[in-house]
Image (spheres, rainbow, N blue to C red):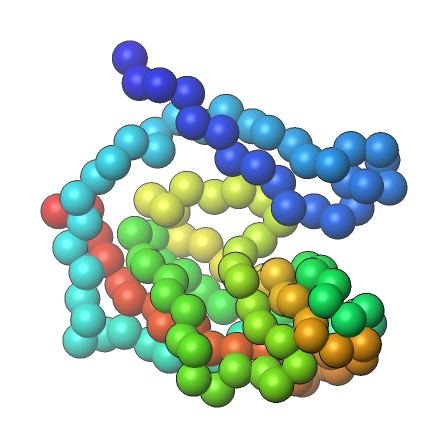
Length: 135
């Protein structure tokens, strides 16, 4: 029997409900060997899908244009082509999906160093998507 592992939600609307996070136990997150295919890696821009205002130093979740992530695919942040206003720290979705399933990233966590708005169509950063499969 494996040890319980928990995923933590990152939805901003939880604060409106008086909660700071939701922890959910997930099965099947044990260490697994994967084979990655660097020859088919994709570099994808992370692009804002709506206007989101920021205070200086604020971190918020920004809806992004959907990015398909294949099952067992790895996502690595590229530090080239970053947004001069701030940086992304993660991409994903509001609902947890296992790495064994195809996923669609439609949200990014962005931290701004300025009091300004991210505008629809702004590039927040870039990610490298490396396809993989169970070894």
